[in-house]
Image 1 (spheres, rainbow, N blue to C red):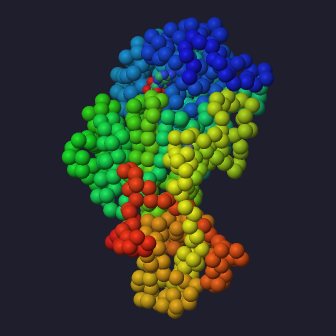
Image 2: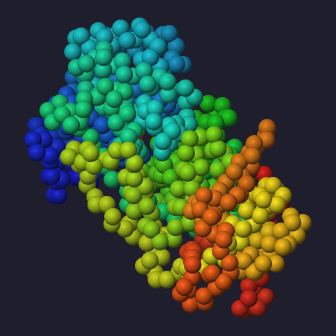
Image 3: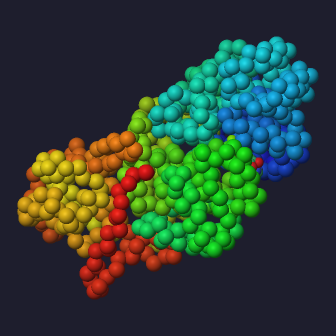
Length: 638
Ligand code: ADP
Ligand code: MG
Ligand code: ZN
């Protein structure tokens, strides 16, 4: 953090020929400090805010800003807008966000206005009047204004000609990208149709070539960044004189404590665990519980109220609510009259609640990007906050059936599974390597222009995996070669013998030696190469083993579509060939030497923590735990 008025200690090295923007020595600095305090009551800058603001005020240069959600992107254009002559035009996709920002700005004594689809003729006239009179500092509009309103564009043109269009800001700039929506980028789930309008924003550079553009986004791969820059006509960053400057903050937010917890089998147990956890760690504070479906949000919300006997006040938020109800819920939550919002990912963009203390994923997200964004809504005030993902292998196949239509949908879910089943990698390092792992362009292409403040590859020391490492061994590697052989051979045989389709639940039953005779698998089980796993694993563990086999390609998910749902079936995967010819003898070397193949997987040693939802193995004797009863009653996938 940079204290206002103080010079920075470890200023990052400026690029050759580029001024050092991370200083307090610019002529406007005292004014900047004054305005920050007067209008925003801000006493220190968040990382990168100062250099971004300085760069904006220094020269009319394009800026591309990648700062995490809650990183304080708004100030990066609001403060320059106050210090500069003329009007700053802000294009933002979300109406509630626009209203919210303008409300705050008015309160802060800044002349700001907005035009949205719902604005009345009188309101529009008033704003356009104010534009002509040059009294506005900030004007927020939705992208369709640019795409569709000739009259508005004419007004802007007048401003431009008079030299009064100071800057154009594109918030949530990743929306411009075509690739963004398909490739590794969060689906833009909110306003139904702002995507096409965002693409039309290229007109801005054509019509107002001299006006600098500032693009802002939270997560953005280098590919998406390239695409957005092209679409907006931003100047090529490789041009040292006039090229765009890229400011990209580290992804990591040190106050967020990431954690994956095993999810209990039964709904009631999940809720019990959740309520207990909330009451223990965040009683009375604000949080979000993300669910997969609208139906889930209602069920979870009601159960939380019941289980906490009304002490945890919660409400539901999803796309089907009326706009008014959405606003009301959001407001109640911000005022802490509601503690917890149980929501689908429709509750997303534009949430402005700095002291949201926890985000619980009742079901994990459809992608790592999604998870990063959703969880990133916690702890915007910089104070410690918890990001908990409840994970159960079964949820993963439910997710894959939901994303079958999406490009890379399944792969995205598998990456999320990798995250959830990883007990070793620091979560920060996981995210960093995930987001820098862009096959097409590397971020380092821009590295000359990146002003990065913290180091990569340093573990966070607060996530579950770091704590595990610090507290010593609580992970055990178990050999799952026999289980792999069993699963792959069952998948192969069911296909060959009966052309039967086998769901994960059926597979688990067969692996346990249940119902396999009926399925014509008796002879398979007579060979020693397939073994019933009776008693060795819980259902949850078998699900995780199967997910691991799917991720690694020993198994493959095949989807079957009915008019009402899609179902995931298991079949042999692309590398099943390595397994199919194997005999028990091939893997039977007890010391592991000479084994043809050995597949191992991490498991958690039973920890007796309160937060842990994992079903305890019920054991009859001390040494031989009995199989947990199967709790699968349905295999519905929605
Ligand atoms: P973003 O758009 O990057 O997600 P916002 O601009 O909405 O983030 O800012 C998130 C919150 O942080 C807002 O409530 C804002 O007032 C607050 N904030 C931003 N910068 C600072 C700062 N330097 N000090 C204190 N609060 C800040
Ligand atoms: Mg924002
Ligand atoms: Zn860590």
